Image 1 (cartoon, helix red, strand yellow):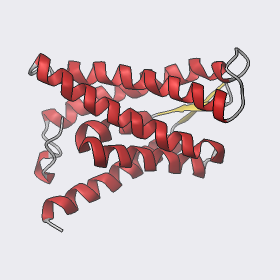
Image 2 (cartoon, helix red, strand yellow):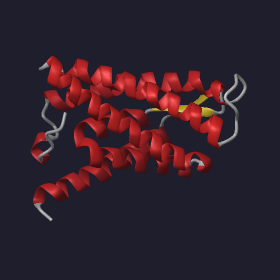
Image 3 (cartoon, helix red, strand yellow):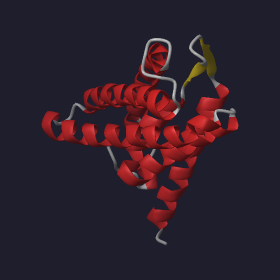
Image 4 (cartoon, helix red, strand yellow):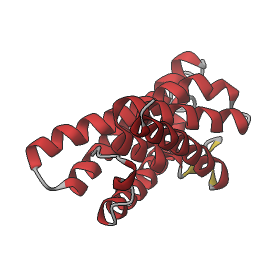
Length: 180
């Protein structure tokens, strides 16, 4: 292994741990049988900063581990897939937007975060409705939409702000990370 690949591996593990801890430590109970947390902030950051492979895996593993540790075992497979997809979508959209908008990195990340978090809301809606058997109606999976929208908004705002700080102070450049 090269020095750079070891750094990327360590950063991937760090982002998995950060997304797990941010999910576990800050939990605001939701009236919809769940909780709002800051894990999505690190899911988005992992996608933007680590790229499609390492970012997706870090986001998926960290978020699924948090669900398993908090007793939401029935959500672990869905969370693994959905949060990994959120990181991948955020990375892909930010990269595509960056190629069109040029130097407006914060705007590109904000737009990609909003769209990726809307995909998270839809992903959990369909996961709960179709795979967990809660139904797609108002009393079933649809009741989780408001809480997931709030969680997505908090994650998108926090991730965009934190990514701006990481860029401004070049915090990860010394580790050889040059993603979005």
